[in-house]
Length: 112
Image (cartoon, rainbow, N blue to C red; front, side):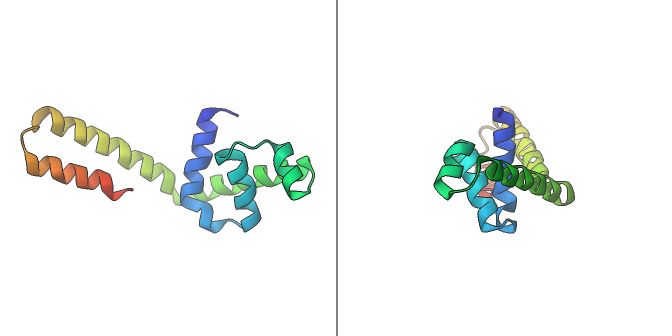
């Protein structure tokens, strides 16, 4: 499992978690956010390792399908990139404009 994949799944979860079943949420959160192994999850829930693996893979596909249709995570990433560009530009060209710096900070804090 790569860090890029882990970050992507966690990002998709941030947006689409409410659309998943409780069981899907539990398994994928334990695997990706809490870094438990398939075996540990299987043991904790008294199911086979294969059942956990299948559930996680299905959930990953579901998350990707939601993103394919809704593009919420992609839009969030794009907005963050533009915000970073704006912030760098303002810092370089308008660092003495307190009001502009405040507005950029407010924009940045809106996403939290």
